[in-house]
Image 1 (cartoon, helix red, strand yellow):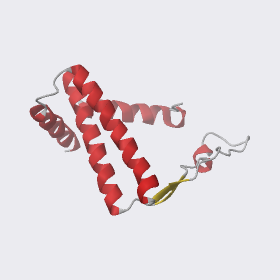
Image 2 (cartoon, one colour):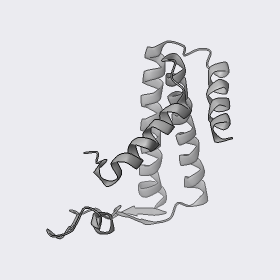
Image 3 (cartoon, rainbow, N blue to C red):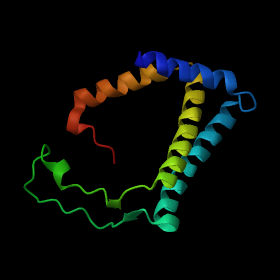
Amino acid sequence: MKDLLCDEFQEAVNESLVRHKSILDVLTKFQEANARVNRAVVKAVTNCGCIRVNAERQRVPSDVSLHDLPQFMDSHLSGQLCDQCKEVIETEIGANMFYLAALCNLLDLNLYDVLIKERKRLAALGIFNFSD
């Protein structure tokens, strides 16, 4: 069922992507969509104020195990998205997903298969799947 939803989304993107068929167009539109997600989050902080960023150095005890590490990590966020900011961010993430699916289409990749492989990688590596 979930793979069908993902496949249907990818097919709908394929059918609706007319003007930006070039890999160069899709790459730059994907990057632009990502920047718009970032900008929407920043505006939720700076224009609306529904969420706040209270960032400082992560304070992790030197003797903490990798298993217990997540409980010491802070997102630096406080507050909750208001309905308006949530809607804008969801829209921008949707556009980002659109261009991700378009990129998969152009490269003959199945988005669902990519998700499954990443989930398996996460399951296998667990906490050792760090990204810098």
